Length: 244
Ligand SMILES: [Zn+2]
Image (cartoon, rainbow, N blue to C red; front, side, top):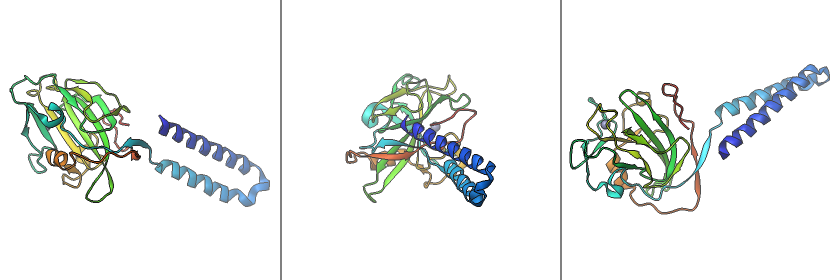
């Protein structure tokens, strides 16, 4: 991908820079410049450590529901967001017909975005997909970002790095190998660092969104031609599983 190429180019530049510094270090004639070059190289390395990887995302033209495209027709929320004990960081979506009748139903990306994470996490999670979205908040005019999470899937049909459109199928509804009655566990986060580490941030509305409220608020946004540089590389690895 383009942003990777840019990073490698940066790395190449930095490694050439350190080689030049070493050569100069060994040449006594440059003693006067030694420390300055050394400092320059160190500054360059610090910069490379803090360099933020980005991908160019189209700004979302709105948000839909993850089931019963686009209005969640035929589904209901059995359990909603609850940021105090007993915690529930999102919504459990079920088919109206009950039981496992919704098993294998299509799950859709709620908006345009990029797939940040798509793995079988085993344990209580099972198959999980995380998608990052960029959108303009009409109230402030500012561009904001959020992540949507889809868990306990029967199948995942996207992989890390895929660009997805609003309403594109990303997997099917599951039960995490029979651990639960089939349902979709669905979260929206304002905080881009959470990934699979929910304990890493306080359970407050600063970091989490109430999914139905969020979708209702941003249901229809203006279409924009420009793309938005969107930060990636914000997750901590989860049992060796690495996000974008
Ligand atoms: Zn749940």
